[in-house]
Image (cartoon, rainbow, N blue to C red; front, side):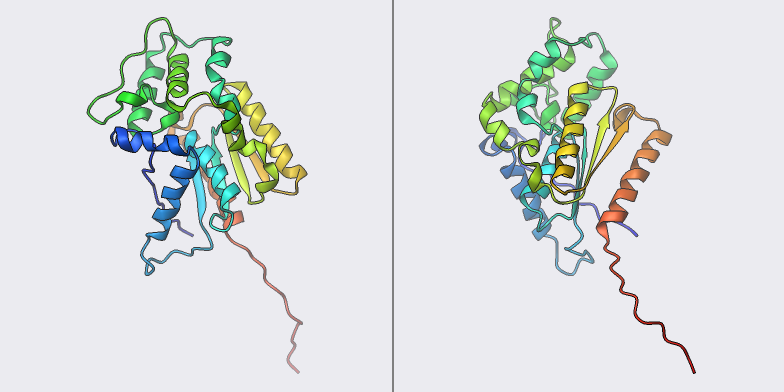
Length: 259
């Protein structure tokens, strides 16, 4: 069984100009989801794709969008894989305060280079400086007084604002009863424990409402894993998709015998 992959540079993606990036401010979930759905509808009808079997997979902000996709549009998306996703945007808005009270990861040049690369890959949740993000103009080096992680959190807060009530209203954790499609949550156990605990709470809430949510904990970020570790995680994601993409409702009839 194979998969066709559609990767969408929805509005809010970095590296495509300030207008494209800033458009997400008018709807953090609605704008990119609208673009994703429009891209799906733009697939030529002759393409051998079953519209009944569409999964959504994302990491970081993309993971958040994956959860919102099945929450808001369950008629389109059959299941979701959310990797390191902020399930509570209210918590995400408070992240600078949370980071300031935890161990700072300063002077980690390798981590900083990874974050800069991710900005160029277009993840607004990891954009160093969204207001100056272009392909040919890399983000500036964070000031010495802040760790890279804290600087990134402050930049995101400056870009998206601090309307905690509005963020809470579009948080997947706010309405777990609407997450009735199968979900796989993938969380890094070496990262901020608050995100792991939020994922565990979301899984429990979904199950209490009769939904299906699996939690896979991994050691480290996918981008930092070696080939073996990466393959193991992808194999588990594939198993989840194979189980939830297809419905094997085979009715067994009466046994027929030859006289």
